[in-house]
Image (tube, rainbow, N blue to C red; front, side, top):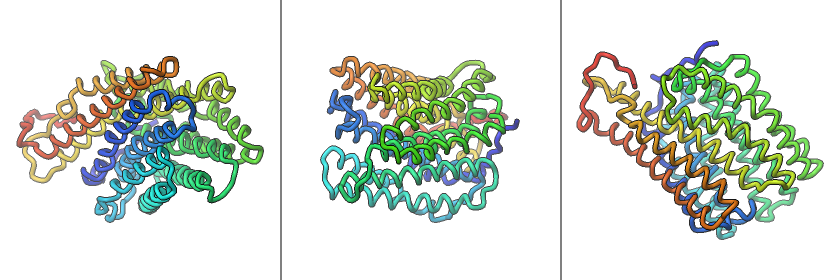
Length: 429
C-alpha cells in the first residue's frame, strides 16, 4: 500500500474552484430559509413542493457546487488531467449553474412550465460544457485516480440525464413509471456520483489530512467498479415496477455502500494525529451515516419509518458532513499552496491553522452536530423544531461563508495584512 502522489504544481488558478465553492454558502442558506418558512410542510411527504425544492437546493445547489469545484481542483492534481484553457476563462459557468438551480427550486415551489424549461436549459447546458471539458481533460489520465474520477463523472452524467427525464415526465412531455425512474435517479446520485466522487477524493485526502495509512489498493480497484452494480440492478428491476426498483435499490445499498464506510473508519482508528480535529469528527459522522442510511431506507421502504430520516441521514449526516470536514482543510490548504507558489514572495506564507483557526473549524463542527439533532428530532415535534433546524442550517451557511472569506482575505492581502513567517520549516501547518 502506498499513498497517492499529488501533483500540486498542476493546481488550477486559485479563483477557479473557489467560484464554485462560493455558491455553497448561499445555496445552503436558501435551504435553511426554506425550512424556516415552510416549517412542517417540508416533512409531510417527500413529494410536497417544499420537500422537492429542499432536496434539490441541497443536492444540486449546495452539494453539487462543491463537488463540481472539487472536480476542477482534483482532476489535474490527482489524475494528472489537463484542463483545456477555456475552463479557466469561462468565469460565468458557476453563475449559470447557480441560476439554473435557483430556477429549478422556484419551479418546484411555484409550478410553471417556463421556469422548468429555463432551469433545464441552464443546468443541462452548464453540465454539457463542464462534463465535455472534464472528459476531454481525463482522456490522457492513466492512473487509478483517473479511473475513479471518470466513473464518478459518468455517474453524474447518468444522474443528470435521469433528472431531465423526470422533469419531462413532470411536464407531461412523455409518460413512464415515474416512481421507478425516481428510484433509479436517486440511486445513481447517491452511489456512483456522490459516493463515487467522495471515495475518489478520500483515497488521497484521508491519509493526507488525517494521517492514516492509505486505502488498500485491492479495495480501491474493486469497490468503485462494484458500486456500478447498484444503478444497473435498479435499471433492470424497473421492468417489474416501482416497488421492485425500490427494493433492489435498498438491498443493493445495504450490500455495496457499507464497505467503504467500514474501511474509512478502520483507517481513521489508526490515525497518527495526537488529537482528533473537526475534520476527523465530521468524517466519522459521515461514515456512520453511510452505515445507518441503508438500514433506515429499508425501514422506510416497509413504511415503518419516514423517508425524512433517510434524507437527513444521507444529505446532512453524510454528504454535508464530508463537505464541512473538507471545507476547513481544503480552503486553507489551497490558500497556503498558492501563496507558497506566488512568484517573488518573501518569507513563508501563514500556516493552515492561521488561515482557518481551529476555533472556526470547531464552530462549524458543533453547528453541524446541533443541526443534525434538530433535523432528526423535527419529525417528532415538527413545530417548532423544523423551523429551528432551518435557523441552524442558516447558521452553518454563515459559518462556511466566514471561513471562505478568511481564506480569500488572506490570499488577497498577504503579506500586507498577515506578517510572513520567518521559521525555516515551510509546512502548511
